[in-house]
Each structure stands twice: as structure tokens, then as C-alpha cells.
Image 1 (cartoon, rainbow, N blue to C red):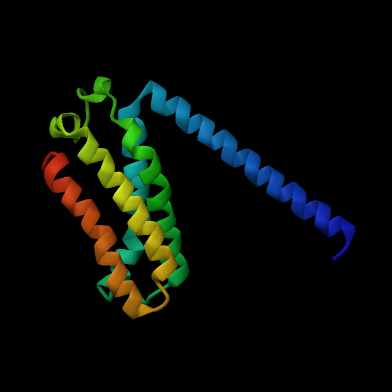
Image 2 (cartoon, rainbow, N blue to C red; image 1 turned 120 degrees about the vertical axis):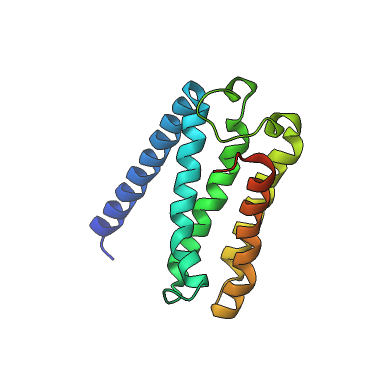
Length: 154
């Protein structure tokens, strides 16, 4: 590798890091201004990230480990952010959250921690179709269990 290639790679990494910081800052500003919109955006992103793995789990599309792990990484990252996006001031408005969210906040936010940990563990454990079939229902089960208790019926 030449010195030019190394410098080019460092510039690219610095650019990516800067973009991530700016994006995180923008997300934080939106979250402070409108936590309902911020959490909806994160949930929508998670649903999109899990669409392909869900199709793979059903046998509708072939297993693609890279896509599965990318989707799980989105779930793990967003889970870490979501618990803080349910302040008392966000009970009203266009939200699908039930009052139970604020009545049992410790359980509710703990579910995001569990989801994030299960998604991170699945990233490491999924190596083939058998391990995929073993790990994904646990991750997806976190979503459904939380929705049953804390989300308005759609």
C-alpha cells in the first residue's frame, strides 16, 4: 500500500466518523423537539431492517447472513436509543403508546435493553440457517411481547 492509499483511507474514515456524529446530533435535536416523531422513525427503521430477515425465516427468500446481521445491528442500535424517547410530555398526540408505558416505565425500558442484548447476541451466534432459526424468534418475540402490553391495537 502506498502512502497515498493510506491517507485516502484515513480521510474516508474521518469523513464517515464526522457524518455519524452529525447524524447523531441531528437525531438528538429531533428527539428533544419531537420525541414521538423520533421514536416513530426509529421503529420504522427497525421494521424495515427486519423485513428481509422475516422473509428469510419464512423461507420466502434465501438466507443472506450479511443482511440478517445488518438488520440486527439496526435493532441493537435503535434499542439503545428508544427508552429515552418516551418522556412524560409525549403521552398525548399521534402516538401508538398506551398509558401503561408511563405506568410501568422500568419494565418498558428494560424491554429495550433485552431486545438490544438479544439482537447483539444473535449477530454473534448466527452462522447458518439452523442458528438463524434458533436466534431470530427470540429477537422477534421481544417485539411482539412488548407490543401486546404497551402498544395500541392497530
